[in-house]
Amino acid sequence: MEALKLDGVVKQFGEKTAVNKISLSVEPGEIYGLLGANGAGKTTTMRMVLGLIYPDDGKILYSGKPFNSELQQIMGYLPEERGLYPKVKVSDQIIYLARLRGMSSSDADKSLRYWLDRFDVPDYYNKKVEELSKGNQQKMGFIAAVVHKPRLLILDEAFSGLDPVNVELLKDTVRELRDQGTSILFSTHRMEHVEELCRHITIMDRSNTVVQGDIREIKKGYPREEVLLRTSSEVSGLETLPGVTGVQRQERGYLLTISEIAAAQRILQQAVGQSEVEHFEIKEPTLNQIFIKVVGGDSHE
Ligand SMILES: Nc1ncnc2c1ncn2[C@@H]1O[C@H](COP(=O)(O)OP(=O)(O)OP(=O)(O)O)[C@@H](O)[C@H]1O
Image (tube, rainbow, N blue to C red; front, side):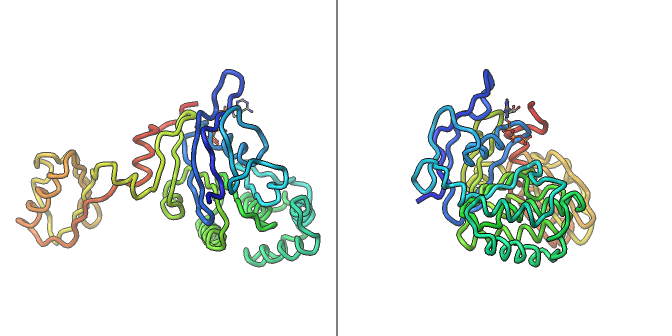
């Protein structure tokens, strides 16, 4: 059974429809990507899942059951805006939050120390949040979200403000939690993270669902419009081939854009006739390209 299921969920703020009939299912042990431009309705959807605000219509089910306050003990949330108090010690507030979610003080303490060691920052235990850098505050927010071992984890822009080493660390952690059976609703503007972590996604645009499904299936539905070519010497005349709309010279070859798949064969023939072909690839669209296509390049707010 789905760990989380949204069925026709609607949220209005006065005249404004923030979320319009969203439906999606997250399986146990799945990382599900919730994507969209600024103001699309992602955070509102997450806040409804967390029971912080109520849907105006539709249903949200947790392993088949409707919301009840005990569910808060099995849910973890990393908000987009940091939720920790700057002036309070890391240990005081994270243990407090874990206790609110049903953990004993000693288990909460053990779990916090485990995570601080895991992130190689055991000395943060006694530090105030405001003493930490932005990225390290984000890591403490992450620990606050997972300290009580939630079964359903809601991550809103979890990797924002982190350097590449810490992004990898948190990515590995998220995968590990998934492998332990945690279901994760994951929102980000970084499409490459989604490609690496998620199998199923929903893309929202101005409160509506515009794309939904398995990333590999979604990609099959979009034309392949780029060809990567590497040859031992220069190839002339590529830009004049029918169906070739752009030729970009790269460090070790060419990146071509095409308007029809037949153009890829023409490129290959042209290259073989003049040089030795070291690499030829008809690239599938990236999620970033699909996102820009369906949502447009800018915010709609
Ligand atoms: N409490 C509120 N009262 C009124 N309008 C709201 C409220 N919360 C959100 N909205 C509006 O609902 C829409 C969706 O907002 P939401 O924060 O869910 O978007 P988002 O997809 O999370 O955006 P971002 O990527 O910028 O975080 C926006 O137009 C926003 O202004």
